[in-house]
Length: 399
Ligand code: ADP
Ligand code: ASP
Ligand code: MG
Image (tube, rainbow, N blue to C red; front, side):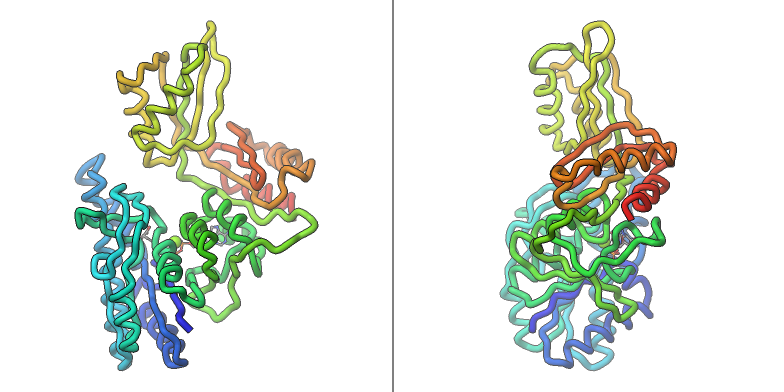
């Protein structure tokens, strides 16, 4: 079998943990499997680099951020190769450049375009454990890029897909996917399996246990995916294609604190305003999430929307761009907000789910800022201080 194994930052945070990873890898290698390992940077390395960068520059260039952040993964792969070689098993570490992982040029949010497989295949044929840097790519100008926070999962799934691996295992610090973040809701339950679609929603709505693009890719290319613990031997959670279920199940409650809310106050109440506003945001590459329009004072209207925190400055720049031709009174923004969502297939066809969720919030005395629904999820925007309480209240209600 060809197995791609990805280990997250906490799984390689120090020498002892790296040795533990080496042992696990060697165990499967000795059973005759071909092994490709994808690693994250050690522990909090990436967070620390980001802090350091902001001490030197409030808005560091995205190219330099990627140049900086990609070093983290290069350290961990080299160290794991050494740990495996120490046990007399052949191993080689490779970065994105050496593999040939071409991405778009969107620094900090690059997308994989092509992956060369020749070097990887050669090394595997020589019976080496191949250890690849997660999170990184290279653009057409040979600059390093990164795939967005948590992107090593996506590297792993992409490699599993191009190499037609038999299995892609994501090893992390929890033993599977739970009905809510087990660190926030201690009585959350581990799921044996979850569909790609449900996991995609959970991941996109803040459950960082898997990078959302990794799930998107696993679904598209049918990559068999398992999430399990790097520390204990347990079954884990299988992410797979739809399994027919009769009754609707709430698969999980999730929370995303990486949110900022913007309100554009006093826009003209006439056709074309929303178009101009979202058009300029798109031109500034700002991804907009929940949108709410309301009637303002004196024949005006207000438009509120949410973005990921890192887009806040760009969003404000975009709205103030004179070329956009939008006139408004003022912009409000709030970074102390969080999105809390419930995810489950068939949400729309089951009456009462929304009512039950809002009842849970009412009982917990949580004020709702914005609401958004879809076929598979209901999301509310609340104050950041209320976030964990909200997750617990909703989880208890649906238990
Ligand atoms: P890694 O460093 O291995 O990539 P992450 O920190 O990115 O690990 O993801 C694992 C974390 O995801 C867990 O420690 C857990 O707190 C969090 N998490 C959030 N939602 C869930 C969920 N529904 N199930 C399991 N873990 C979750
Ligand atoms: N090291 C990167 C991060 O912390 C990528 C990853 O861990 O997946 O976001
Ligand atoms: Mg992660």
